[in-house]
Amino acid sequence: MTATGMTRPDATRPMDGDGAGVSLDRSVTGGPASVWEGETIRLRPVVADDWPAFAAWDQEDETSRASYQIDFPRSAEATRTWVEEAATREYRGDRFRWVIARHDGTAAGTINTHTCDARNGTFSFGLAIGQDHRGHGYASQAIRLVLRFYFEELRYQKVTVHVYGWNTASQRLHERLGFQVEGRLRRMTFSHGDHHDTLVYGLTADEFAAGA
Ligand SMILES: CC(C)(COP(=O)(O)OP(=O)(O)OC[C@H]1O[C@@H](n2cnc3c(N)ncnc32)[C@H](O)[C@@H]1OP(=O)(O)O)[C@@H](O)C(=O)NCCC(=O)NCCS
Image 1 (tube, rainbow, N blue to C red):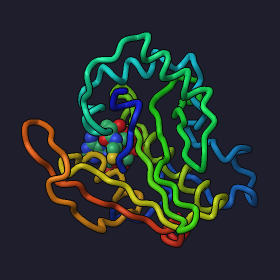
Image 2: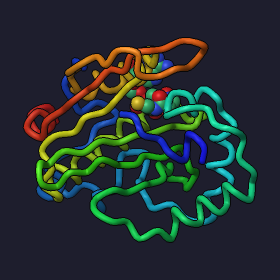
Image 3: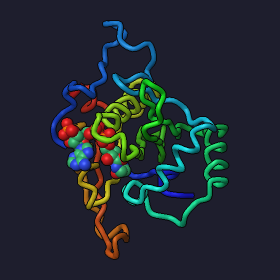
Image 4: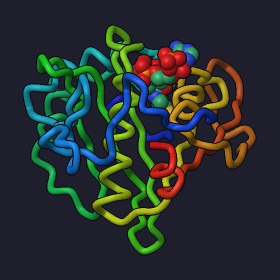
């Protein structure tokens, strides 16, 4: 299992409805027909034909390292099997994995929720955007769509994300979305020959609603 296939981890400009925005009152204004529709991307389930995209992301060490960790190389067969399993998996609880697809159908990245605690209303997510697709607001849109669904449809009330201390791109991304740093866990990961801290970012449903 490689890093991209297991994206785990997890500011302070409020969500300000910029180019990567998702309107909250679409039902009133007549916005996208689907809750999974962003301005330039759509969240959809993993399908078996996605395996070449996952295989390509596995080749990106920096993506793997930032998402989770660099693992031993994975064969095309193993990737195909893993993607087929993801495509046919019956999800238990509220965990899920989506492909972040551009409107022309190109798979640009993946986002997955985990550590979903319905009783307390807390969850977490990880995501990765392929290196060729960064800087277009895809991550921002994907996160907003997922948060809106979990807060407004599944009644979750808090999301936390763990971001490696050296991952300034992800830190900036989450800060731009309104996440706040809630803690620093010291020496939690080993990479690049050294131990690194992990930052814990959090956002409540109320903060999400207020910033939208
Ligand atoms: C972090 C990551 C998900 C961002 O994806 P993206 O689609 O390029 O992000 P967006 O285009 O939505 O960027 C939103 C904001 O994030 C910040 N950001 C994104 N990439 C950045 C970078 N390389 N350096 C600094 N800030 C960055 C910017 O503030 C940006 O807003 P701006 O362009 O208006 O200033 C992507 O770089 C990635 O997949 N990295 C490897 C995996 C990873 O880190 N996953 C997250 C683990 S917690």
